[in-house]
Image 1: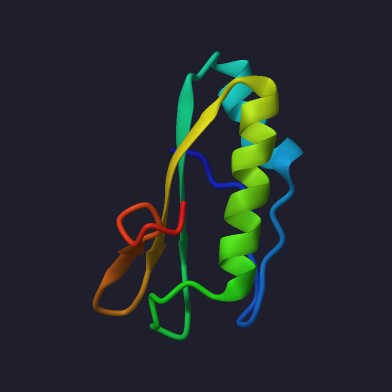
Image 2: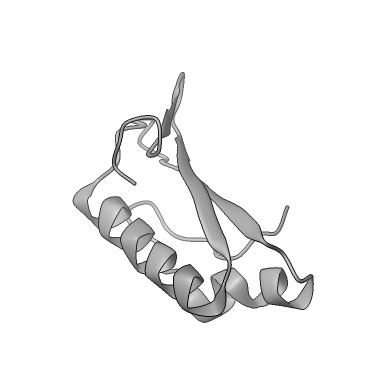
Length: 86
């Protein structure tokens, strides 16, 4: 597990170079993205979905598969893969 970014109450930025840096260094074949929503609502925002798509594309370019993106809420979690969003 690797902490990439710490955001504020309403947003956080994650750039592909930071997200994949450790995976490249460790010669990883795949990664799973995980983040929490301080609001407690585990549903993905449009920005979450777009970020996930950007990470998937970046991963394709460098040969590291993004297996899933999980959002942790107050009582539940959301897998974008399980919801068919990736």
